[in-house]
Image 1 (cartoon, one colour):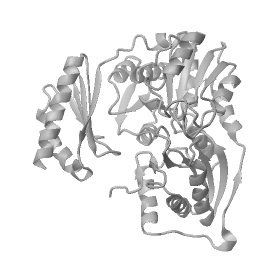
Image 2 (tube, rainbow, N blue to C red):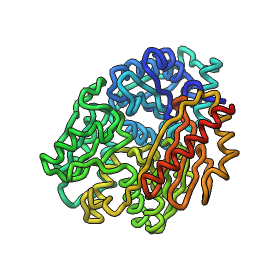
Image 3 (cartoon, rainbow, N blue to C red):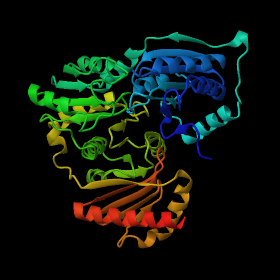
Image 4 (spheres, rainbow, N blue to C red):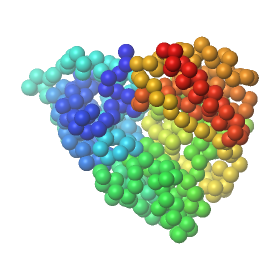
Length: 453
């Protein structure tokens, strides 16, 4: 059954149309019903609508008999970690992460700091759709209180990371949820900190809440001017981080993930790394050379987290900067990741640019083919029937998320989008010409399947 409210990262939508206070109240009551009350940790990002959505959500939790501890403005990974540290039955974050300011959302974590899986979310869907709510009696209503627990998270990082030198770090917090806590963490580690966009503002006036090369020109310029050691940019809720090197260049996402994955394997003496089907083959190459193994999952941080837990992996992440360090918790954590990266740079005695310099950067092309949601399954079934004959020399076809064709010179992924009425295609090869050819074969195949359904 397709999910009506929940997507790959909780519930997310435009405030007032797709996400209303009424729906937020129902979500809160559904969580209270599902968990049978208990302690719930709640936090929110810097969006203008977040206090409103939080208030409605908490009203639902209280009506279901939950004891709510509110953290206020907080990054998503901080909320997840504190949920685990305080032995709460669940944690709920009000955030739309890297989406534009008109969006907001609700993301729910379990007691292990892992985002709710599809199975959990389907249970909540049924409760909401069929009004299977359990409301507490007037004498057994829950309550809500603000708590100061940020130091637990700060201490976790300061205990995990030890830096020998004083790094000059430029932090671009993007007016999001990391504005207060990220500078505090780096100063606690004896770094010299320069901040950009470090005041919470739900309109995100400094830059888009999604950090990428196009939105980080100011950070790159400041890095060059100050001759700082490393720049870090966070997304709106702090579960992603992007690195700018000492030369003022945004490091390619797949390269930095590959370099850190190989470092983690070498440090551990082996182990499993988890990433998704859309990530570069350079990750496999580096991890294999270091003595490790790569397992690929569906796209989405919760799928990465679930595979890490099941496979007892030592590290995992998505190239967008969502990295998970299971020895601490199972939520992608931009702040923790950026501090652990500094420790890795010290361990290898390298600058950020040197850290990724030996990692090959292969041409990776992407496109989207419009496809109505109701036709996606039929189109993919058609393509799967043709799959064995699409590409000469196919070594393996993975079906964990659409179809991933692994070839001697690269790979192709064809998968239905979970958020848009499109089929996504990605192709990577040793040369751009070859990647373009692989992409065109997939494009012709999809268009042919669309004509037949």
